[in-house]
Image (cartoon, rainbow, N blue to C red; front, side, top):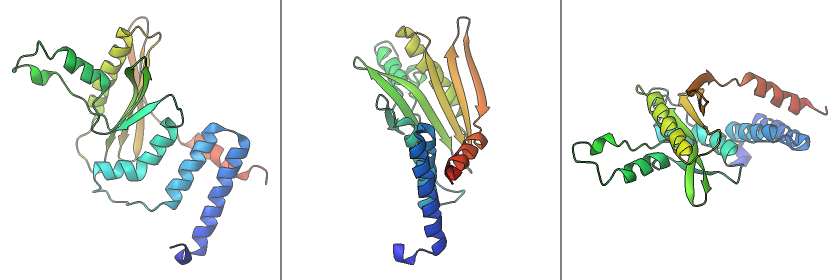
Length: 212
């Protein structure tokens, strides 16, 4: 209850609201997103347990970040886990008449933890996929992410999309790694690198002190 909150919590909320207001005044969309994420994460209680389940881990710690980034663009749709990748669904459908019982398991059905897509003329094209591993989870989905990116890119190429690009994000516990697949004239190429939060944190601090 609010009546039971300590003075420190009120000071924290006041400071975070100031960050958000300064971000709005700056009209910097990136800073507004960061300020909104920071406020939500700092003021909403979350379970910090290494044995947390994957779904709870995603929706407790990651959902606010993911939706704040990808739901801001009205042209993009999104789906959480248990929704098959569109390129995977199309492959399964196109081979349904020719696949025998011995080989039907070779048609892989891929279900990312999160998918961001765009719909054009009634067709869905997946552009971003996210795979998540909890802190204590032994297996990871990095190889699965690579397969997802490949068939996503193949679908864009078959649709004759100019300069097609798809993006995959792999979250290993609390560490985020991004992988970007793109089509070059010579070959498909993948680069993987950790996301640097230092510069964005510094910018958020600068916005918070602006105008003082």
